[in-house]
Length: 180
Image 1: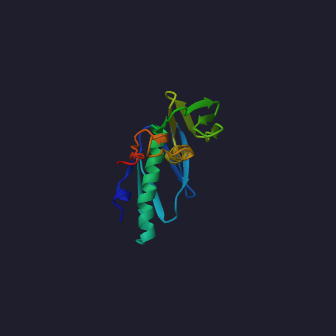
Image 2: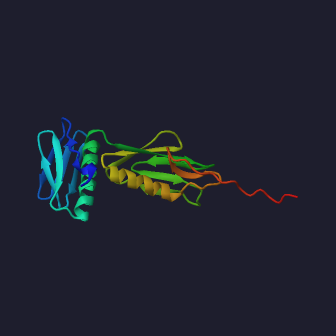
């Protein structure tokens, strides 16, 4: 059995949880999230707790047990506090602008890149070189941050590119020349 799956999920006040026809719906002050639950995972909703169990003891069921407990917990946290991811752009001439629901990124290519921010994610610019992505769906916020990072991943020689704020780049020494 999964140790993660055994822990019950506490539901804070102001959050409403419904499980109907295999779909779990979580409503809170920040919004609403829905997720289909695998048929091998059983969901019990009590007063202020959600507990999970599995139908059989197969390896597949045990792996789904911990996975869905974490996914449901992320839904509850998302509708109460939300999630946030910060990206930092570093490099000479690298900058970002927000125009409507699009990010316009100048990342050293010949033309600027226009990136449409998906629905459910909001972007704010802290300074000229920091993008703060926030939303209630952890998976969507993380995927959006990863796509923005992939536009120009940081390189190891000068550290130029788009990186997560907490990410550390292993730097390499450049060419040293011929020594006599």
